[in-house]
Length: 108
Image 1: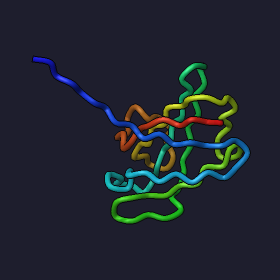
Image 2: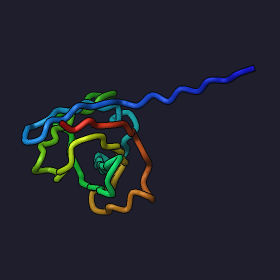
Image 3: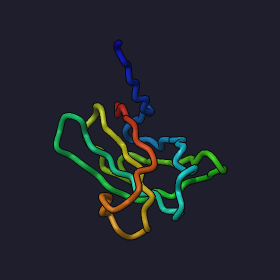
């Protein structure tokens, strides 16, 4: 017997030097109203952490705007992993926070 496991992640395409919109399902799990975002490049040892407030949200989805550069200095193109945590608005220690969503960003 062979078992197959599939992990689905969200792929978001971002363009440098523009304002990018992202829609996430993180709203369904957030309890604090603060969203800590962590970006980690797949190839280089580069990581960025910041808080983003949603532009709008429903009981299921949240829409965010990420301006590059500006909000985060994602200077290298390529594949980035993103992680959204249920933050407290001040701390950047994501190891103590609940992970709400993760996925990938292709930065062009």
